[in-house]
Each structure stands twice: as C-alpha cells, then as structure tokens.
Amino acid sequence: MAEYPLKQRFVLDTSLFLSEEIRDDDETFEEGIERLLDTIAAARLDLNISCYMPPSIAAELEHILRERGVSEDVLGKLDTWVIKKHPDRYEVYIPAEVVYRFIDEMSDRVNRGLRVSEKAVRKAEESKQRSNGGSKLSDVDKVISDLREDYRGALRQGVLDSREDFDLLILARELNAGVVTEDTGIISWAADFGLRNLRGRAFPTLLEEYLMALDSPRPWSKGDDGVDADRL
Image 1 (spheres, rainbow, N blue to C red):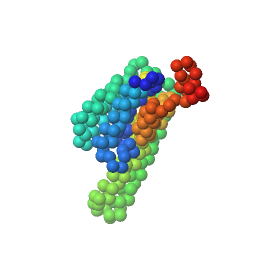
Image 2 (image 1 turned 60 degrees about the vertical axis):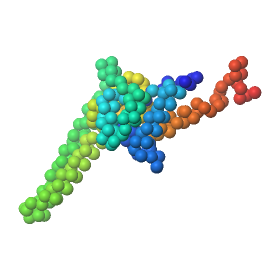
Image 3 (image 1 turned 30 degrees about the horizontal axis):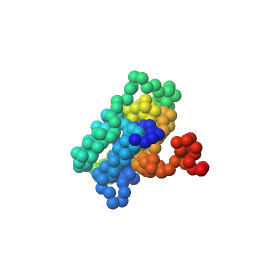
Image 4 (image 1 turned 45 degrees about the horizontal axis):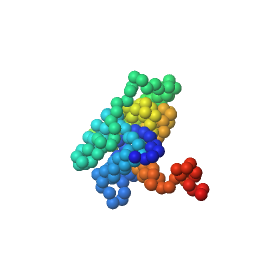
C-alpha cells in the first residue's frame, strides 16, 4: 500500500473497455481488457484508487464481453476490481439549471428530428416520381436507411439518451468521482454536473503514470529528521 494513497475515485463507462485506443497494436480484444483490469487492480492495491460502475452499466458491459467471447477469468477480474454500486437517486441533487437546459435541448432536438423526417419524406416522393409511379424498393430502402442515421444523429448524438448514462453521472456526483468515457454526450453533461472527466483512451496511461511515480524518488520527501533529503 502506498504511504500517501491518492484515494481517487473513478466511475467507468462501457465505452472505456470497448475503445480500440486502449489496446496495443499486437493485442487482442481480450488481452487489452485484461491488461486494463490488471492496471486497475494495481492502482487499487498500491494507490487506493477505486473504480466504480453502476450495476446497469456493469450488466451491459458483461453482456457485450460474453458476446465477444471474453473468458470467465477476465470477467472474474472485472467483478473483483470494479466496484458495482447503485447511485443514490433520492439523495443526489441536480441543479435546476441543468434540468432546464436538458428540457430546452430535447425540445430543440425534437424539432430537428421532425425536419430530418420531412426531408426523408420529400426524398421518397422524388424517388417515386423518378420511377414514373412504379415501385422502386431499393431507392425507398436507401431513404429509410439515411433517415435512421440522420434521425439518430439529430436526436441522440451528444445527449443523455439512456438510464445507464444518467446512472453513471449520478453515481459520479455522489462519490465526487471522475467520469471515464469515450461518449461525447456523457463528457458534455459531466461538465454541466461539475464533474471531472477523462477520455477512456487516456485512462490506462494515467494509471500507469501514477504507478510509475510511486516507485520514483519524491523530490519533496524528507528524512527521518524532517530535513529535505534532496537538499543535503
């Protein structure tokens, strides 16, 4: 255990584990996750850095990892070193300004979604006219595909769109913890919640730097007599 534990806390998002950026070039998907979990374990034991997940996100991540064939040993490490905790939704307060902004943004996004839908209807009608009233299913399918992509971007990109995202922010606020994610929507709202946030791709390096610093001489350390040893 470190002599001066940092006692930092982080709440981890699913996107951290799925990001290609956390893996070395020669690592498989499972090897990259196992190395991350080993680093989290070392940071917990040596620096008292704790990593948390809401159970809703932990269940989502476990399901994805099982689908990708990750071994039970690695899943066991996830269960051991990442703490599952339900956010206290009744005790954590959110500033009214944050709620007001969320309502205002969702109203704007609904309008944007309507415009995307209207554009798709016009494209479908134009496609029908070009085919002289005949059935041209491939063109309509293309319009529908574009509509789904554009609609998703208008309504969901950069916004909290799931209970899991909200649980993550509430838990981080409750614990005064940093949020680790690759989700731009969560990053944006973490700032509004007054939370520290870190891109998932940078998290393994952060922990590794902390662990390396633990073994390095501290320039501010003093000898047993209280004298700064580096100034002798």
